[in-house]
Image (cartoon, rainbow, N blue to C red):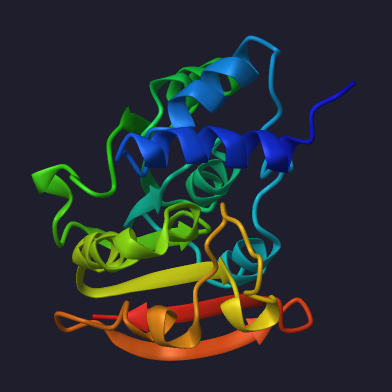
Length: 215
């Protein structure tokens, strides 16, 4: 009998959380997927629809961009194709290995890094920061430090875009993450340390937050 990818992810997350490691379930899952023993429940083989529409009107012209929690890297490759000098990271070494196998001629700079303890050189360094469904992949008690890290990547004059499942669209009774969706107040909280909300809306029939911020 095949294993449901969402249930498999939840089981792996439960194990990592029991060990006090909120990001510790990603590497085993990506390693299992690379070995053909698991399926990534979020992998669609194409960039985010919202990001694709947004970036179509905003060519990069060499601006520095960062993709947070790049996964299988469709969003990062999209930014590079739009002219951005793109960097991307994921906490899973196996994810980065899979990305480099998938895109051997990539122009993107990929690396392994943890959002909760990010590289110091990322601070205030990017003209565009993209965070789509990464903070929500971690439990609620680490959302605030994760959000602080994301906001801290943005350079003065830069733009941050955030996409996340809307907590307001789910029934919280009996809900088991991952994901742990973001409520409106959490999305608004990316506006800190000089970062301001430029736009905030619910899309996909209200199921998804799409927000833009500037510094």
